[in-house]
Length: 453
Image 1 (cartoon, helix red, strand yellow):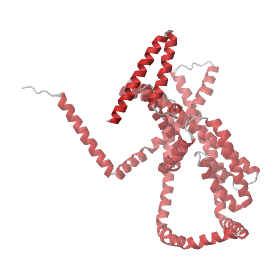
Image 2 (cartoon, one colour; image 1 turned 180 degrees about the vertical axis):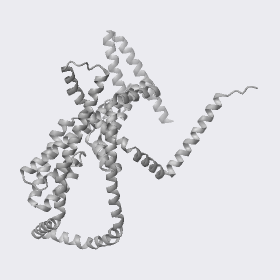
Image 3 (tube, rainbow, N blue to C red; image 1 turned 45 degrees about the vertical axis):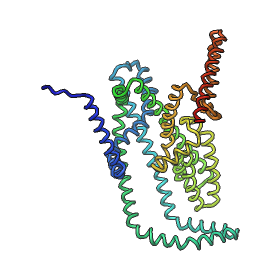
Image 4 (cartoon, helix red, strand yellow; image 1 turned 45 degrees about the horizontal axis):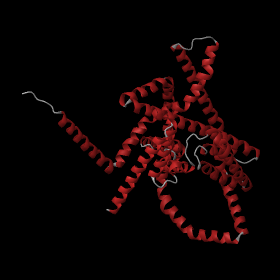
């Protein structure tokens, strides 16, 4: 007797197995969340050099493309060399990558040899003269308190209230954990060394990615068309192009904007002869990458540092940084970034807050473009659904809407009137409108009957 496999029971068995496996995975995820996150974290740690390589390749692609298209290709054509040959293209790409790496390493060398050297010297000076700065701050506070008795009384009450709690916190919490703190600092130093090693490996990987970026792009498209339907694959490729445009233009624009702000801050501090000009300019430039909160994160500690050295210089710096950030927010930023994300101010603050809470400083820096991609995807899906229902996609159409039937009635009236004008047949318009009115009336009567029941 020949055995026959019933496909219906096979499908049931596969479905039951998948449901059972999903239930087990869900149970494990709920009750062993920490283990799952540890596994994900370990995978990310192993893949970190590759991630660094992909990020570096993405950031260096515009520079490599500039050297290839604007410099080397015209140069080859000027010497009447055939740029359509595969070997010539490979040579041009190799030269472009070499020029990109040379420029990148040279800029890093300048940054670490000049800027970081001054930054380290400034930090050493702060540590050596910290007692003088504390004395200056004490004298400043004494002058402020002596000139205003109300503030002096409030400060005295606060000190008397919280000095005991501060002493207990230092003795009970900080001192017993000093060994843990030293261990964490040591691990941080090792983490920085490991990060530098991953960065070097990532730089090597980025060279291979830049050399074969068209091949990787083609493979990704091939995978999309093989796995998904043609329509969905086209949509996915379109989404990735939009993501590249949004993310790339925002990140590159923000980096350029922050470099310009850092240089302007250095020039203005030199003009006004403010202390620690290079250190403060680096802090202001780096923190300016973070939207909205960046100026506060860089400006407040810098202002406190200068206030400890010289109160008058501190006041000058506060005025300078306020003017500089107004210039950045109203003139420079819009010129460079434009409306690259398409987000309102509320969603910018929302994305920075959420991503900063989960991913720290890095989340605050990249939260805006990442949320812009999520926002654009949801918006596109909603607009497609509304279009399929024959409804408007403009938000203003819904701001003062009471009932969707009323809006539909108006839209259909306009459409029928246009059709009647095109066909020069007013009677057809009257008939269609009477039918539409009867349909709407029946809908209202049905709703009334349902309410009465």
